[in-house]
Image (cartoon, rainbow, N blue to C red; front, top):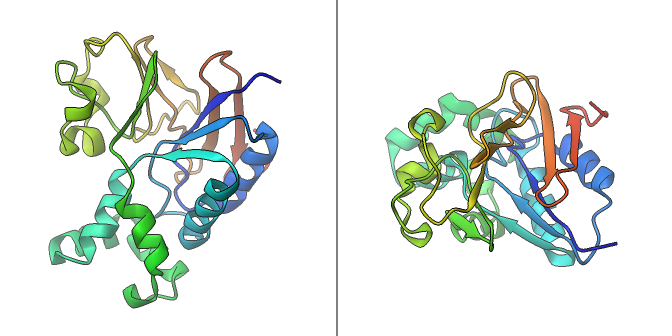
Length: 215
């Protein structure tokens, strides 16, 4: 089987969905799995999702970019406003998965989140959580755009000509939003939707429900 590059949209604490999707993909050691951020919050198993990603990265090639929910969690340790914002955006549920105490979040999980890049770049594609600034180099993207940006503000491709693969903006249709130069894989997992994986070369799509059933 040729080596594949497969991207997965926002997981939001749904371990059953992540496990089922990884099984459906039949991931091999030669594949590259790219995760688009928002691994935590809203779903009941944020801690378990983070651990699953860490474990997967030990046996497979896994690239995980930073989402705004990971950013809120990290900043919650430093800033009361961010803590309150995180709590009101599903952070309360994430914290429950750690026993309800910030001090019980393992250092290994925080270290993992700290090293997450904003952007990952390939020859013909780049991967970022939310959005991008078309006229800025990919290694110079602004955190606010990469983590929080709106797809409504993107009206033309990145100047590199590369296709952007993003998450962040839930698609109520439960289908990939495809504008050619930008594809959004957030199909509302965490909002009663489905979790989506997408092979960027042959365009195979896999989807499962939040409970891990085929969609």
